[in-house]
Image 1 (spheres, rainbow, N blue to C red):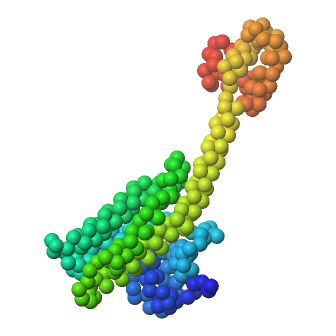
Image 2: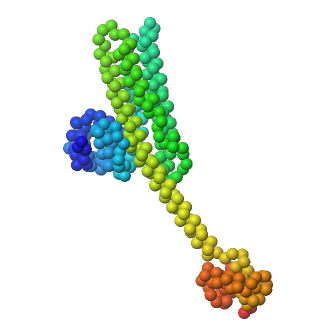
Image 3: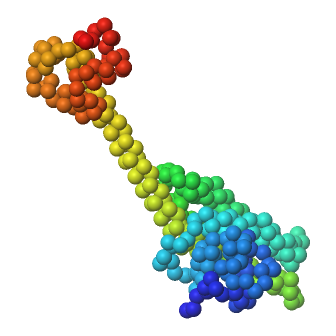
Length: 317
């Protein structure tokens, strides 16, 4: 299969597959782009070119297989695309279908099937709305935090959209109900038009779910992995920094040795005063010299005075 390229003219792409018009709209690209290429239009509209192209080609290929390479996917761009898709379904498509459905079916009191069909449709829309609201408030908010560099704990179930199978099959069931059980006394072009729009909505919803499962979810997992890795590296660096700072700080026992040195005591005198061996005192003095980068008794004495470990009266000058 020959895939679309950045150098292809967007007008030719849309002419080859009308479904891609919705993709263009959901990326915020409006009509009137003239003879520009995909790359030129994306640049002008501030759209991530590789992400836009990936979704175009995914839909062209039938949206059946998982992507082998998601390295060029921008998670923020896909997130914006999915949010606009939600708005399209909830604020435009589903209300529009319901409006035309009401005009096409007989809603008289005697037609119980019409009421049941309408009830079925309303329940389906409410189910999709609940599902999409969950994604907006839980999944998408989580992804926004990942994009901002936060590594937060969330159960895997929260990331994946587990109810896609349930909502995808409902529209097909609705069209089957019409064809099998809804009585038509005469040709009803209005109803036929509604059924066609429901088929198209089902196809669009299926593609939307596949984009979430096979493009968005893998890209988020990669972002999640990279974010957690960066946070872990930062934590490790912070620990190393803290450890280095700790290595530069004197222990309480070393401070006691510094005080003794400032008072002019020999290693033997320090050992007797602090109840240590001479070898231990020698080790302490070596560590003090390494940490402070001060090797002379005079320098240690100045350090002790400046840091108020001893008063100048206590020093043996």
